Length: 86
Image (cartoon, rainbow, N blue to C red; front, side, top):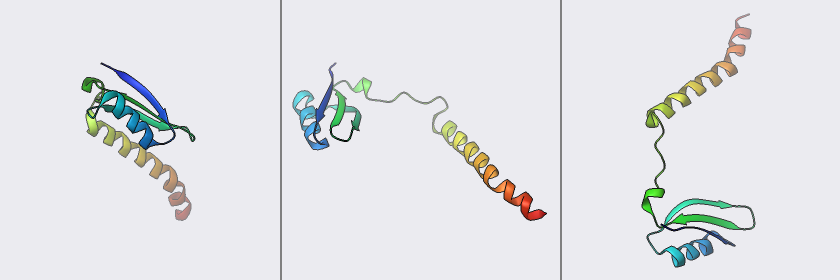
Protein backbone atom coordinates (compact mmCIF):
# COMPACT_ATOMS: atom_id res chain seq x y z
CA UNK A 1 0.00 0.00 0.00
CA UNK A 2 1.30 3.41 -0.95
CA UNK A 3 -0.25 6.69 0.15
CA UNK A 4 1.12 9.92 -1.25
CA UNK A 5 0.40 13.62 -1.05
CA UNK A 6 1.17 15.74 -4.10
CA UNK A 7 1.16 19.51 -4.42
CA UNK A 8 0.90 21.50 -7.64
CA UNK A 9 -0.22 24.84 -8.99
CA UNK A 10 -3.59 23.48 -10.12
CA UNK A 11 -5.70 20.33 -9.93
CA UNK A 12 -4.73 19.09 -13.39
CA UNK A 13 -1.01 19.17 -12.58
CA UNK A 14 -1.65 17.49 -9.22
CA UNK A 15 -3.64 14.71 -10.93
CA UNK A 16 -0.81 14.19 -13.43
CA UNK A 17 1.57 13.69 -10.51
CA UNK A 18 -0.78 11.17 -8.90
CA UNK A 19 -1.10 9.31 -12.20
CA UNK A 20 2.69 9.25 -12.66
CA UNK A 21 3.31 7.91 -9.15
CA UNK A 22 0.37 5.55 -8.58
CA UNK A 23 -0.98 4.80 -12.05
CA UNK A 24 -4.51 4.92 -13.45
CA UNK A 25 -6.02 2.83 -10.63
CA UNK A 26 -5.22 5.38 -7.90
CA UNK A 27 -7.86 6.34 -5.35
CA UNK A 28 -8.21 9.97 -4.29
CA UNK A 29 -8.56 10.23 -0.51
CA UNK A 30 -8.60 14.00 -0.15
CA UNK A 31 -8.16 17.10 -2.27
CA UNK A 32 -7.91 20.69 -1.15
CA UNK A 33 -6.68 24.07 -2.25
CA UNK A 34 -5.01 26.63 -0.03
CA UNK A 35 -5.47 29.42 -2.54
CA UNK A 36 -2.07 29.20 -4.21
CA UNK A 37 -1.50 25.44 -4.36
CA UNK A 38 -3.61 22.35 -4.89
CA UNK A 39 -3.01 19.28 -2.69
CA UNK A 40 -4.16 15.70 -3.36
CA UNK A 41 -3.74 12.74 -1.02
CA UNK A 42 -4.07 9.46 -2.91
CA UNK A 43 -3.44 5.75 -2.48
CA UNK A 44 -3.18 2.59 -4.54
CA UNK A 45 -4.98 0.54 -1.86
CA UNK A 46 -8.74 0.33 -2.49
CA UNK A 47 -9.48 -0.71 1.11
CA UNK A 48 -8.44 2.72 2.40
CA UNK A 49 -10.57 4.67 -0.05
CA UNK A 50 -14.03 3.67 1.13
CA UNK A 51 -15.49 5.86 3.87
CA UNK A 52 -16.58 4.19 7.07
CA UNK A 53 -20.37 3.84 7.27
CA UNK A 54 -22.28 6.13 9.59
CA UNK A 55 -24.10 4.38 12.39
CA UNK A 56 -27.71 4.10 11.26
CA UNK A 57 -26.79 4.96 7.68
CA UNK A 58 -28.52 7.53 5.55
CA UNK A 59 -31.79 7.24 7.45
CA UNK A 60 -30.14 8.35 10.69
CA UNK A 61 -28.65 11.37 8.95
CA UNK A 62 -31.99 12.25 7.35
CA UNK A 63 -33.72 12.00 10.72
CA UNK A 64 -31.20 14.35 12.30
CA UNK A 65 -31.62 16.79 9.41
CA UNK A 66 -35.41 16.74 9.78
CA UNK A 67 -35.13 17.37 13.53
CA UNK A 68 -32.76 20.28 12.95
CA UNK A 69 -35.01 21.76 10.27
CA UNK A 70 -38.08 21.46 12.51
CA UNK A 71 -36.25 23.20 15.36
CA UNK A 72 -35.08 25.98 13.04
CA UNK A 73 -38.59 26.41 11.63
CA UNK A 74 -40.05 26.63 15.11
CA UNK A 75 -37.41 29.13 16.23
CA UNK A 76 -37.99 31.30 13.18
CA UNK A 77 -41.77 31.26 12.90
CA UNK A 78 -43.12 30.67 16.41
CA UNK A 79 -42.37 34.23 17.57
CA UNK A 80 -44.19 35.57 14.50
CA UNK A 81 -47.17 33.34 15.11
CA UNK A 82 -47.58 34.41 18.73
CA UNK A 83 -47.19 38.09 17.83
CA UNK A 84 -49.72 37.87 15.00
CA UNK A 85 -52.35 36.35 17.31
CA UNK A 86 -52.30 39.28 19.73
